[in-house]
Image (cartoon, rainbow, N blue to C red; front, side, top):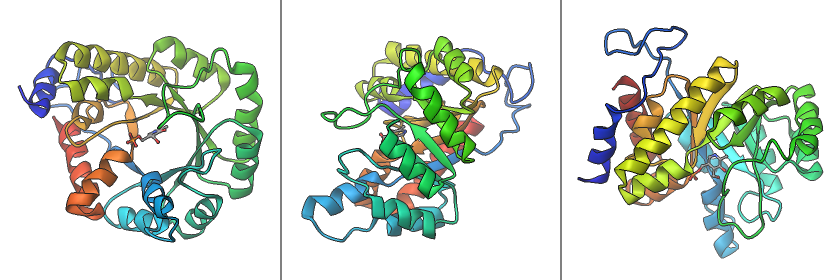
Length: 279
Ligand code: PXP
């Protein structure tokens, strides 16, 4: 079975999903879905720019094009080592964007100071290790509670909507709610690895984890986002979860853009999300 086929075949085996704001099970008759937001992560445009030490491609131009093509928000991760997005990109995004900027950041004093000076719409706190190729695993919000709490408070007091990038586990939803974060972003990396491997058992297991965490988190009053590793082929079952209000997607969009252009890649992802949500 092909990857897309195996994922869509699994959709019928997902744990029961509640309709938005109701206790009713979701059926094709009662699903009136709220549109899910697509946040486009433009880090890899900066990766290409930096690889040649040039001024192009410009991640801000990519962000504006993505918005024109249907992105509801833009995400950019200013890493400690500035390997892709730079401080000037964040300032330009803040100046030029007409949609919310989601500032992805490590919970360090340096990044908190930049966030407080920039005032993005949202700040997504992520773990950051120097040697990693991308964000690996969610935040340790249980062990890191004492470190995270004052930084979350400082961001929230500045009117920045704080989101915590976490593993999809009910206990972690409890910890996020206890920390006072209004939003969690569920790490979809393990699900996406299973999807790429075409491993139906693992796909079902990972989707069940995401589903349970989304339901539990939403029940605690958290706004649920998700992302990491999602592609046009794998996004459907995650988009289908009514509690998930936003998906943040980067690598697959920039990869697809090589072949179809960024605007078309965004439109294709938007269409795949809408299909998943309606399914
Ligand atoms: N969400 C978070 C918190 C991330 O760290 C990343 C990767 O930068 C993404 C979403 C997007 O992941 P991908 O680039 O694999 O789509």
